[in-house]
Amino acid sequence: MCLGPSPSEKRAAAAQREAADVAKREEAEKRAGQKREDIMEALEASTVRRGMRGGMGRRSLFRAGGGGFMGRFG
Image (cartoon, rainbow, N blue to C red):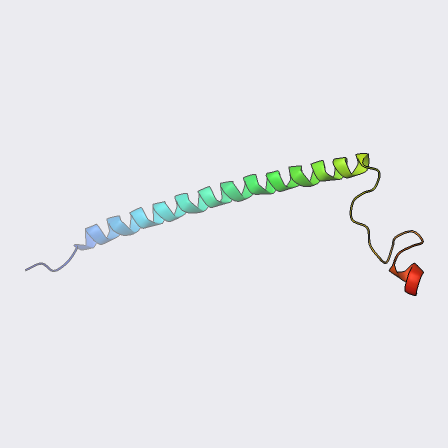
């Protein structure tokens, strides 16, 4: 009759699962760090490009100089 895995086999399987979880978590943290760096680089590049275009970035309707929402309707 088979009674299932022995206690030592259960411990070995639990240790393997724990090691796999740790490795998966470390890989996820590594990818998150890389994504964070990529996003920061993209934002910095966007800021530099916006400065060279002469202010063609997004402008607020409430703070636009003279002709925004508040200038027309306020």
